[in-house]
Image (cartoon, rainbow, N blue to C red):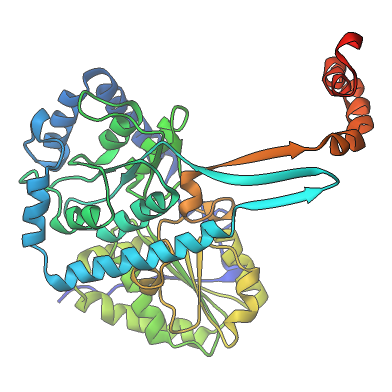
Length: 437
């Protein structure tokens, strides 16, 4: 009989001072990862396609050649044959749902303001090319492809590239290939891990580099994105998945446990936690987790994740619980309280799901919101991925002579204050004839 899972439980006022730091990757381990990632990146920069072939054989056990690094149209046709009609329909539904949501966001962003003869318009220009990283190998994440490629398409990006690790036969998961076709992706490469990030950043004989890299991944992928960010733009630190549930005594412990298990199944390094004001709810969740974890599919991953990174914290008040949530700033936050709508605006997270009928799974597949979100506390300074991340904001300024004249004196004062006299002369010249120049 498999050992029952015991999630660590804390009283809020007994938490060690370094508790939040402990939930993050050990600093020594992070340094070791960074060193190995640097080696991989340099290998790809120096050896190009040959490095991709060798590293794919080493890490994914797949035998590829330079000619088979890129997925072909025939492979996509084969993928459709392996995918059910219901699955294709679900992918198209998600594509349409995300696309609609993203278009509405963009429409509200372009602005125009006029005052005293000066008009400023803000327009959006698409980034020239983007690379979308889609985790894969032992699992398929076509939803991640949709979440990364669709906003880029909506933004008008002319070249969208996908990298996803192959299986042992050297093939990208059929669902990922079908999703790439549904979303209008231009290129798909059978490369994963840090080597994929290096190829997207610096290019090889087969892979032309991109201007920006987006998408979640393991700590290796996240570290690689951070290392190449000095040379190419990235979206955000999006590492192992996280969910925190904020609950009071009215919450359904069974639903909380199911949601924690659903996040833990992402992988052994996934974080699933409960912050509650109710000892009764905490105890019930612990009991449900013990039962669910040992009987669930993917129970090995779930049990390991809950044992290592699962937690329950019991607080003395809802205010104290809110403070802990904001300090943690999780990727996903579920609010299961009597009146979730009253406190949702006060909370910090990559995505906030209010009420018992708004689980993380809804935002993953059905709400049209994006599930590529900041992790590791970065929700305090980063937003979730959107079409805006694939654009550049450009301001267009147009002034009448009268409008310029009204601000002329202010410009003169500031130009003199910063010892830039020719700035004002450029203004003054517009009010003089040629002979007085």
